[in-house]
Image (cartoon, rainbow, N blue to C red; front, top):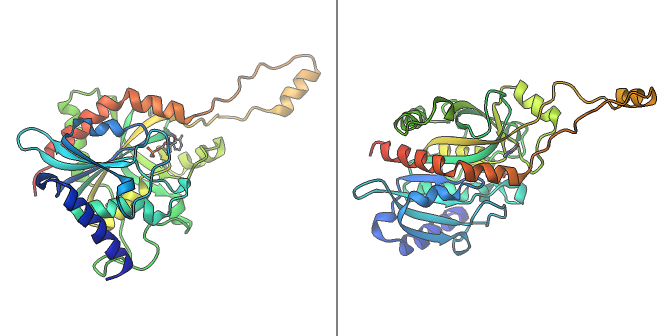
Length: 311
Ligand SMILES: O=P(O)(O)O[C@@H]1C[C@H](O)[C@@H](CO)O1
């Protein structure tokens, strides 16, 4: 057995020996994005396992991310067994990509077939108001394309995996349909849910105006610092993936730059120009919007899970 297979089986053994019977085989996995750990509040009979107790897991160091797996049941009757990652790992924290996607591979080995990933993102498309939930239809992964940060670099973890994973169907049409049907059932307003392309950047810096303009010009609607590695690993593991991206702030892309040259000239001519400073984004702002939308996100995720057909 290879080192990684040994690690996986040790983590799986740890989990299966801790969990009561109905929770051992979760059917759906949820990844909670920044400020969205309350998504797991709709779970009952919850068993939480701190990442600290699990071999191979890192710890999330980002505010708004906890560090535990929450196993529980969702929905009426006997309920659907699910597992939520309360906190994820980002490469900008210093985690290796293999660590970032390790929990996803563990979820797959526990039997998870459907993965619902959530994140906080910056809006690039001006039509997307803060608070909109974007059902991701595709991604742009600059770190993958440029060669440094593809989670599938290296020897195949299993001979059954394809060496060249196609990603034209990365985001499940079936699950995306369920998201819009669930929104309809919950009577969410039409503009609560939109569709779009997520650009993955490594972070931790937020985008400069030029970077925001570039990402918009190449077709991205929202930008964030997570999700894509998880989605790619989940696809390699054969899971169906859906991503709900909560727009927490606009990415500021001014039509023109403030000209300091013109300002100085005007000042010297005795006619100072009144220029508003550029707005900036902060993680606090991201967390505030996550909190404001936590209830809607939670209800939406629960409704989607309840409507996923049993295989
Ligand atoms: O984990 P997610 O993608 O939800 O978190 C976003 C991206 C950065 O980690 C952070 C920036 O505010 O929020």
